Structure formats: C-alpha cells, structure tokens
Image (cartoon, rainbow, N blue to C red; front, side, top):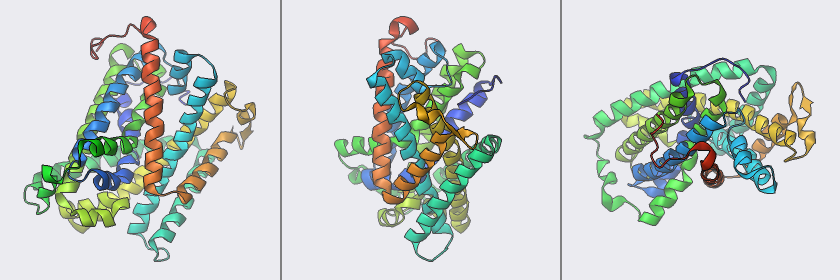
Length: 382
C-alpha cells in the first residue's frame, strides 16, 4: 500500500487506474472472450465495462469519504464492521489477488513461449516461463520496492502507447479486411452467453480499484478522485472495445481458437505485419511482468492488513527478509495455481471473485449512504 505523503494530481491518478486495468488482463482473456462471445466480443467487453463503471461510482464515493491506503479492505470494514463476514470477504480479496497473479503469469508464459523456443514444446516452455517470472518478481520485491515502482511506471507508458497505436492503425485498416463479416450479428451468440462472456472476462477491468489505495495522496480530491475513476474506466472500455473489433475483424475464428492464449500478438500481424507480432508479444511480456510485480506487493500488503486486523492468523505479521511473510506465501500459492490450472479456470475464478467483492463494495456504499450523501446522479460532485 502507499505510504508516501507525496501528493499526486489527476493525470497520475488516472494512470494508476489505467495501468491497473491494462495490466495482464487484456492479453490473457482476449482469446477466451472471442471463444465465448464470437462476433459479439466487443459487446461482451462493453457489458463488463458497464459493470466496472457503475462500481467505480461506489469506489469514488467511498474514497472521498473514507480515504485510506487499505482501499477495498477499508471500505468493507466500514460498511459491515469487523466481523466474520467482512473478514471472509477480505480473505477472498487476498485469494483473488493470487488468482490474478496466476492469470498474469499464465499470460506471460503463453506470449513468451509463442515468441521464444526454449525446449520446442509450447506447454513445457510456458510452465518454465511461468515459474521463472514468479520467482524473479518475488526476488525483486524482496530486494527493492523502488525497482518495482520504476518498472511499473515505464511499463504503463509502453503498453498504453503501443496498444493505442495498434488500435488507431487497426481501425484504419479494418474496412479492407476479409474477416470483417465475423462481426456481423449472424456470428453473435445469444444474450445469455454474451452476458456470461462479459462476466468471465471481467478480470480485465478489476484494476481501477487501485486508485482507492492512492486516495489519501490525491490532491483536490473532490474533483480528482471521481475524475480519476471515471476517466480511466471510460478510456479502458473504449480501448478494449476497439481491440476486440480489430481482433474479430482481422483474424479468422479458427486461427483465434488455435492461438487463444496469445491472440493479441496474432491479431497484430494483419495490422502491423510480422513486426507487429513481435512488438505486441514483447509488450505483453512487459505488461504482465509489471502486473505480477505490483500485484505481489499489493497481495502481500492485503495479507498483512488482514493479520493486523485479526481476520487471519496474527502470525502473518511476521517479516521474512524485511518483508511480510505473506509475500512469500502469496508467491508460493501463485506458483501452484498458475502451473496447475488452465487459463479459462483461472479467468472464471478471478472474475467471480472480483464480481462478488465489487458487489459487496456497492452494498457497503449503499449502507453508508447516510454518511456519504449518496446521490442518484454519478457526476453531481465532479
């Protein structure tokens, strides 16, 4: 969690939200999204985005009235008190961090194995890379959090810049693509499957909650806190929908299915040629690496706060190598989950966990309405 008293403005807060969302999620779940939603993939991302946007209102309100680096943990405790329910929900948050870490690690392994040949076997190479990146990021967290922060700052700029360029060029060239008819309504799945697809890929949006952890340090909070939530979520919704349009309109469904775990790199080939495949693959590696880095740190801090609040064993407040022991435990559990479960299982579990947690935060916002002055209009304070 943030401990610095340095004040940050709207631009920095927005970058935290965008960086949190455009982490490893879009690289990991895009192929799964197309598999589930077919031609309706852009609509599935819109459905998930609407849920994220509505939830961002609760986060904006609660961050204004209860600014605390504990973020989600603090909101749940404020809304429901310190009891078995809030303790169980906060433990679910820690488990969801582990699932997200596993998703990012799986994406890193998939893009890396598609780009580099280690043994020549994709699955073997993938698991070698999964294990290597988790161990490396764990060591980096132990050695220097400053290095973790620096890599995240650089990674946010790189991934947003490259994905934005990809989106602009991709849309420009989409009209001449032979697979454009895949976006037609005849290739859409039914409404129930479309909504289900949106919920399964919801993990691609969950990172906006990180703005709440920075809330105590955001200057001019009445304007900048809600602004950061709304701007970052809207930007990412548009970016994801455009990327989904380009992917479905550029690459045949059969090819997407075969390259499901690294489909964004495949989608870049019709747009930017072979160089595009390499550039997007490297971007995916940088992005997922930075996401693993900060999520390991965040997960260990959630674990530590739970122990301090007696919501898990107080033994978790013990430090190992000058860091909470939760960092090592989080890393070990991530190694197990990432190497034992497939992408769809990890994505579904992560989405289910965060959807439930966000629903509880929304309820907490409603319960605290008499303190926060809840209003029907989302932008009345902005």
